Amino acid sequence: MVLHTLHVRHGGEARTGVLLRSLPGISKKMLTQTLRDMEASGLISRHVQATIPPAVEYRLTPLGNRFIEPVELLYAWGRENADALDALGARPGSRREG
Image: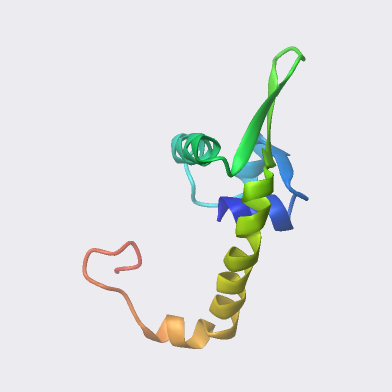
């Protein structure tokens, strides 16, 4: 979701707060952890701007841009098969349960 949102909604770069507002349902802690993992994997880069307070911006790396195509294929498949996905129903223990 982070790669998709960074690419589609923000042209490959966005500040942390912008990403947080663009990803409903994700906590700040989970977003921060995900961004750190993606940075460690080389999918995004972190840029600290010399402002007061410091602003942090994340950008897709060349590797991150290579991942966009398969991610977008999965999103397209999900949109085309939304009815089948909705028919699955909730699994015991899933967040969709209830």
